[in-house]
Structure formats: C-alpha cells, structure tokens
Image (cartoon, rainbow, N blue to C red):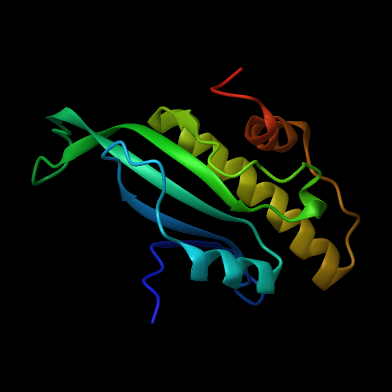
Amino acid sequence: MIDLDASLWVEYMGKQPLALIETARDTGQSWKTATVTRELAQMAGIPAFVTLYQNARTPNTTQRYHVLDIERVRMQCLHCPSWLGKPEQRPGDWRTFDPWEYARFLMNLREGVCAKVDHDVYGFPLHIGEAVEEQLALFSMPSGLA
C-alpha cells in the first residue's frame, strides 16, 4: 500500500496524471522515504518530487479555523524524465521555495507536462515554454534559488 500525498493531473480529456508528490512536515530531515512514488513515476514516465513544508508561526486568518500558513517548502526531485530537457538531479539536492515560488513552480510544471501529454496523446507539437525551463533548471543548480 502507498500513501500518495499529491498528484497533478489534467482535468480534461482523459484525466492523465502529470506528476506525483510525496509531502511531509519539514523537521530538518535530510531525506524522506518515497521509493514507491519514484518507481510509479518512472513507470508512468512522469516527474516525482518530495516536498517538505515548514509552518509559519502565525495562523492564516483567512481560513475559518485559523490553521498555520506555510512559511517555506523544501523540494527534491525523485524522478525527472529526460523529455523535460534537464539532467537528473543529484541525490540529496534540495531546493527551497517560499509559498508563492512553490505555487509558480507547480503551475509551470503542469504547463510543461501538459505539453508532453498533448504531444503524445493528441499529436500536438512539443513545446515547453521558457518559464517552465527556468523553473526546472533550478534542480540542476548547485544550491538555492538563482
């Protein structure tokens, strides 16, 4: 059995999965077990990530129950298919995002993977935009954000 925390997917024409994400609270750990998530992503030919989040100290007052907001996210690429146009991330490499950067990364990742699905399933030309390439390039830099 696997506890899959998140899956990006296409909302139209077939509901194809786009990426798998294993999520946990960030306690400063250097790793998170996600072997099955990685293997499933490799079998499906889609990206897989581990995302560790750190809560803010103050609650998000826009939420009814005043839950703690997210202060930062650390992310590690478990499987990044070669068609995304970037080298595999070195094991142990983590990238840190604030919540807005993380949301932008997910949106750009979705755009790039949707382009691949459109190419493979519907025969559209494959084009991954510059914003997507810039976001994915973060995982081949030595450390941190550019």
